[in-house]
Amino acid sequence: GGGGDWREESNAERRQWLLEHLHNYAELRSGNNSVNLVPAFHGTSHDLSDRIALNGFRMPDTGTDKMDEGFFGSGIYLSQYFSYVERYLRAREDKYGLGTGSPMLLCWALMGQPFPVCEHPFEDEPNFLGKPRKEGYDSHYTVVSGRGISFYPCPPDQEPVYDELVLFSPHAVLPAYLIYYKKMHFLLWVDPNVE
Image (cartoon, rainbow, N blue to C red; front, side):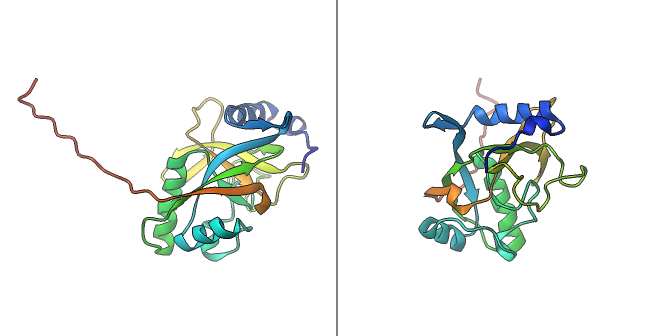
């Protein structure tokens, strides 16, 4: 990785905007501004999360390792937004009949030199749908907006809803915590007779 210059790509201004979003969250270590160590969440099944917690990540295969080809590259996907990963996890549970209650992994993601992806996986050519890492970079990064579980690169004139980090080496993702949680729903009733 390292060594690429996204400023020579199309949409350089938009890519700059994406990286500014990332750098609001990244922790720079060792005085090296290309380390980009980021806490991020990953959701998967009970079995896989236990294996990841014990043995670390591996590159995704077919079957229940993957929901799709990878909209922004074929790698390990994480997000800094718990609610986004939770939404994805519920869709995954539904798709594969995994039941509910899968845990979430909180990881350290070593992004290195990220390539800012602004290409829509279906509307733009070229795009990064199912593609390997952009040569000269260590990871891919984008901010997204959308509905349901269909989220696509966010244009600069919109407020980003979530982000997606794509890592291309299992050694760049360190699982730190396995989080078991339960979503609680509360019904608030207000007595109309009380002021």
